[in-house]
Image (tube, rainbow, N blue to C red; front, side):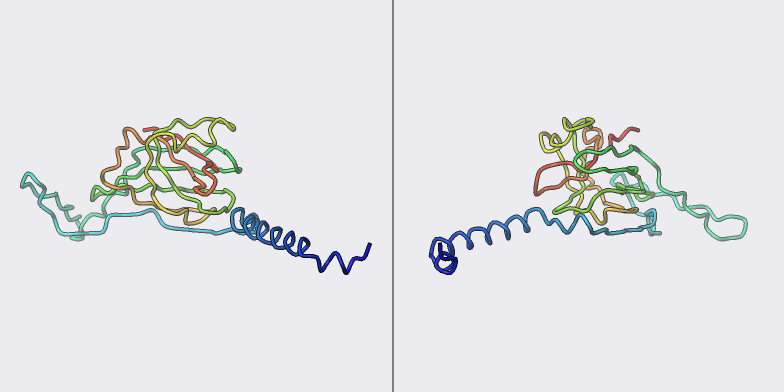
Length: 194
């Protein structure tokens, strides 16, 4: 058997081309180097920016902070914690805390603190109406019902804030997931409780 003859055969070149395409496709889909990458994020707790009083739809004006004895306006209170939950692991080991914060100006923010999960392709932060389930039974449920995407995962370690749309119904959307959109699987999730 002549190795040079086999190497020049069109079938050999065709097989090599198919293998090269399969390898390129697998690298694109799985992005295995992400197992070794870490993206840290350290966003501060959000606050509502000081703004002039605004009239509401009923004509009333939002209250202004009263000055303190020093004559300076009182420092506004921090955001109100509306709901909170601890992450559980799904496809990848995931820990951290999720909090829904209501800012003084009425905006709502999902804050993820002390997140520690794997990096991965196409990771998103979703609010969902699906219950958080332990083990493999909970890996793929979050796209079965209603969900709202809050954006790309900013980092797989640390603290980050995600704006919640004003029309998102937090009475229905009671869980948060780190969702891999490419493979339709949850890396980890937390049930949000008042």
